[in-house]
Length: 209
Image (cartoon, rainbow, N blue to C red; front, side):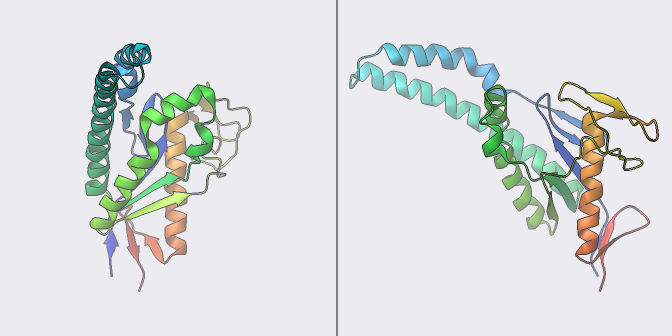
């Protein structure tokens, strides 16, 4: 019988890359923002070069190098965060986000592209599986932000700008993202139970025979 001793839920964000149900928050490194001025400058230089010229080819290569540096820095960050999560936990729950639809929103597009959530999830998934762990995806329609993680009441009127709120039912004050991550973790446990796992007294999970 396999005994899983730890599990967490993750809430993806813009300001914070992820909020973990154990209370930890990992800041968004904003890799693209740090190089944005340089990228724009090199893009302008490229646009001024004559098509087919050696100078245009050189300018294109310089622009590509900056993009590669951004990607490499993001990948390194993803690898480090996903490895830590996979080493410390045997089950990690996340929301099944529709990133392809979200990037169509002009305000969110650049930030979501910079975060690279889908790439991070892929890394987390195979790192967990390599260690015998499990990645659990929670349906995107579950109201993780609006549900009180203490009593289960679904609160109305929580806008994107509202970073904390008080439950009308039990009067518990919630940090928006932490509350969501706890709900995601709880939903992950429910799904694991449905698959034959039970929550141990120590808060871990073990699969029944």
